[in-house]
Amino acid sequence: MCITSVFFIFILKTYQIYSSYSELPETWKDFTIHDVFLQPNYFKALENSSPENIQFFYVGIFNEDAIVGVAIIQRVQLYLKDMFRKTSVSCLKTFFQSIVSKVLKGNVLVVGNLMHTGQHGMFYDESKVSQVDYLEIVFKALNALKIQIKETQSKTIRVIMFKDFFEDDKINNQKEFFQSQKLHNVSVQPNMIMEIRQNWLSIEDYIGSLKKKYRTRYKRAKKKLGTIQCEELDINAIKNASERLYNLYLNVSNNAKFNTFILPKYHFYNLKLELQNNFKVFGYYLNDELVGFYSLILNNESLETYFLGYNDIHQQPNQLYLNMLYDMTKFGIDNAFAEIIFARTAMEIKSSVGAKPKVMRIYLKHTNGFINAVLKQVFKFMNPSRDWEERHPFKV
Image (tube, rainbow, N blue to C red; front, top):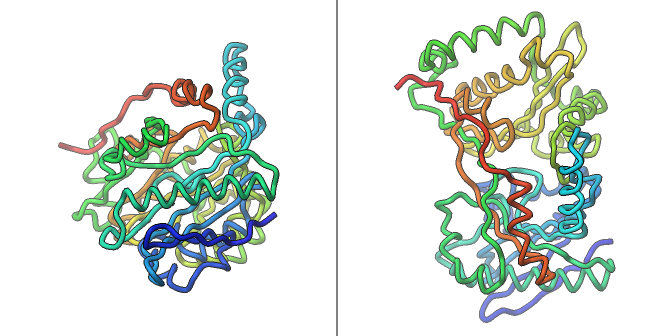
């Protein structure tokens, strides 16, 4: 059920909550041109192929008729089957998973995009609205949404979350504000990012900057790929291969220890349909059989890695995943991106190709005061201390 757009007055500024990309004002597109993940065509792709447990809302903040800020809010329904996948765990782990699911299950309002690592949910013009005013307006929108969702969908919001912020993000200066709203500041897994050096004009320049051990590793990985060929899929190829892409994606997704959603079958096709050249899918073929793929989102100067998948039979023998990381790196260099956002998971292997970890933080609270008091400890269980070794592949 969609929530009808609502309109409120706040001091000299107004805000409006939209329940669909089709309702957004014309000025939204130009205001958010710096970030593909804030563009209406991206929202359209998500709405047409979103996970079943995610609903989208968009907040526009106005000074008179001029848009001065936006916020993306997602209502996420979390249940045990969505959070913990098919992983072999001990009885103790199962017990803790049960506790976590009881604490977090239900409806969550996320300020940001749960489907992608990074801060792609909040943006405002600092010359037109202060950070504190912006946050206060976003909170008013959150409270309005809580009421509307309860009245129209009979759903109670259990958790509120703001994601993801680097340690040097200005929002971290607003400690008093978040404390007044009873939100916890929690460190989460780092975002793995590789900065493209100016002297890397080709993949050969990248290889030349590696230590001998990692040059050998690169050559070995390419050799192990054997007769597997990598090629870009156009929109028709993506559509025709949708079921195979979905199954390969599920193979990887289901092996994750913790997840919050499952993509629908035609998700990649819908992204290609709307983002066109800003969305890329590369497939790995062995004797005309698709055995793996990765996808990329071209976000101005940043190359954002997206979902991938592979057949386990070929993963280790052919080092598919490592080859994907090298091929992503080559694409970033060849197309003169400033950085490659490798996102979370598999931090050690990503560091082995040159990505560096950047710590990220989220702010969250449970609407139940007692549970909110222990929520930070629950997230510590979900996000254990670093247990991987960072690699340093480049020459000094």
